Amino acid sequence: MDKFLIEGGIPLSGEVGISGAKNAALPCLAACLLTAEQVTLHRMPRVKDIRTMQSLLTHTGTEVVEEGASTVRVRAGRITSPEAPYEVVKTMRASSLVLGPLVGRAGRARVSMPGGCAIGARPINLHMTGLERLGAEIHQSHGYVEASAPNGLKGTHVHFDRITVTGTEDLMMAAVLAHGETVLENAAREPEVVDLAELLIKMGAKIQGVGTSRIQIEGVSSLHGAEHTIIPDRIEAGTFLIAGAITGGDVTVASCDKDHLSALIFKLQQTGCEITEPGVGKLRVRALGKLRSVDIKTEEHPGFATDLQAQFMALLTQAEGISFVTETIFENRFMHVLELVRMGANIRIEGRQAIVAGRTPLSSAQVICSDLRASASLVLAALVGEGITEVNRVYHMDRGYESFDLKLAGLGAKINRSH
Ligand code: EPU
Image (cartoon, rainbow, N blue to C red; front, side, top):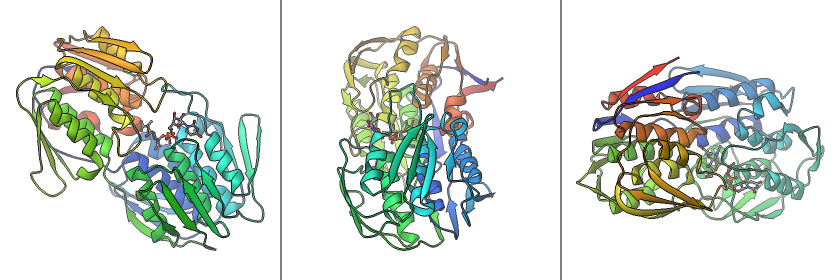
């Protein structure tokens, strides 16, 4: 298993290019199942989860061809096996995103139920209830969800019990080929949902209200091929901004969308960092003097992203004073805390809240990554830790960050990957 060896204490400086958003690219790949024609996707991040989704598509009989550094051409001419096997789903929960498009296009799907996950239970009950409302018959057996709608899905009204990102995406993809109108209420407003809708509209879907909590979809009889460029990864961009801030550096992230990052920008400013826009699609962070403590509470978009909570907590260990971090999206997303404490942080967990007392010097240690964003948090802590930190199990990082070590090295970090 690969690990990172990171020597801390170097302020990062320079410019880093942001890749396409993993969490937008995943549903866009699943959407390719909705048409027999070719869909071309640009700015695809070359990360493990994307490769996994591509193999899943191949398993259904879909042709997937990678071209150049970041383009993928997908053609789901005929779906020969509308199935997502356990072997794939167990390595990537987002595999459940194929449920909606497979039932919509092929009239049936058999998808393994995802098990528990490091950050919480993460059930897919809302995907299933929604599909049932759309007229699919759902059975669960042997760890699989089987959905069938031999005569097609029927437009309906769905009110999500709680906001779910992939649930909204899954049902939107199911509804585009349903008969009649579907309304999704209490829908997710994440930029990744909007990006998927933009691709679907290019493919001929009729969708209104994306980016709001009420999405209206008028079903059409078929979709056609399209070409689409994935949005930049706001979580990757945010992670590099925090890296600049925590190291007291001067970092510019290029090709990002600042509108997707406003909650983070506001919080970074409150800690005393300066954020400027040196050019189109660019954000520059500079840490001016001592960092100040600040409270954060994760929420659905446009609130503070849960996917940046762990990284921001690493930053708060270096801020003067007490910060309260409240996690409202996932019930177990503090796995990084004990590792940060082993590096010298002073953090106490009380239920869904972590109380961070700063500033504490961090020192090198051997630490273990438990999930994608927790891993990023530990790497950021290592960048300011005294000595050489060994960050183990970096395969978690490789699932969602493209060449994270190389990009950090480009900003001056002393980071090496070893086997
Ligand atoms: N939930 C249910 N039932 C459902 C679906 C969700 O109870 O049927 C609960 C979840 O357990 C959770 C909450 O609702 O407590 C929100 O979960 P959501 O469905 O929104 O999460 P997701 O769609 O599984 C996506 C991202 C996550 C990101 C969350 C929240 C993808 C592929 N994944 O997950 O990204 O944290 O939204 O923004 O889009 C990551 O990239 O590291 C990552 C975990």
